[in-house]
Amino acid sequence: MTDDWLILHAGALGDLVLTIQLALRLPGSCAARHLRLISRTNPGDLSHCRPSIRRQSPEGLGLHWLFGEGDDPPPERLLGAVRGARVLNALGGPDTAVHRRLTELAPAALYSFDPRPRDGVQRHITEQWITQLEAQGLRVPTLRAPSASERVAGLLRLLWKPVARARGSDAVRNRVVVVHPGSGGRAKCWPLRCFTEVARRLQREKQHSVHFVVGHVEQETWPADELAALAREFPLLCGPSPDELVAVVAGARVFIGNDAGPTHLAALLGTPTVAIFGPTSPIIWRPLGQNVRVFAGDPAAQPDDWGIAPADVVHVIDEDV
View 1: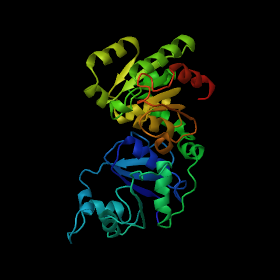
View 2: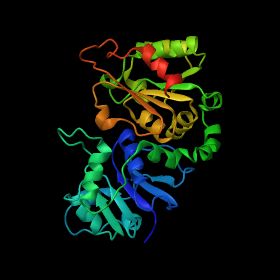
View 3: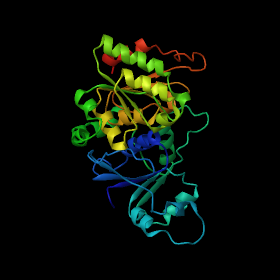
View 4: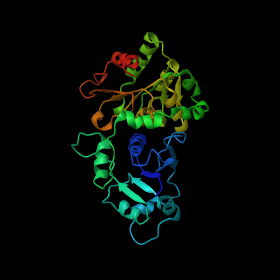
């Protein structure tokens, strides 16, 4: 039996990072040469970690066959990817057609879970996944944040070579505070003026250099004058590639962001992380990492700042993070 695990995933970056952190706890993952990942979301170059995390795009694999019915033979590339592997399937639970079709591909072992949170269950999402996996006979050690991140962060030195080639290498060399004020939807974003107030205080009171990063979602949906004003005041990296984002996040002194994929990525890479939560629950979705501080606010009750004072965020940068 191979020591390698194959992860099948279809979600966004934040969910993917949490799934990777779960996979790092699986039996044999310490000794594995690499974890293989089939995912439409590209987490960036994590091949220099141990075990290395190697992504394969689902394009051309025939992944649609898993969702079909009938007696049609499986695509050869999909069969070759799954056969003989230990598979962690995040495309649906053990009672789904996907799971049944995967068994036809002769994996060495197959464990499936439904990635969606359970209604009314106030437990971290990875704990909810573990409950499903243990019901299938897979014993998973408790997901303690230090152990999960140390597996990757302990060899973070190996990431510095690709970091030096990234477009954001100035931020990496200077070990700046990196701020990502975006998320998948504006409702999940702490007001931008709160982030800029944090950045101004860090520069004025702590003499930190602060860089902002925005993704394609912010470029497409935020007003152009808002981004232009941000760029006039702070260095701004727009639309980094996945590899560039890994480089900048890995090299940051501190990362500050909303409940979004880059925040989870920062926690995975061992970067000290401050996560701002509003409409989503940190009990369920908090980032897992060795050095993560979470602020939880209430946008409905206090829309101006969610009840989170920028001064308090600044305070933890040197005190706790």
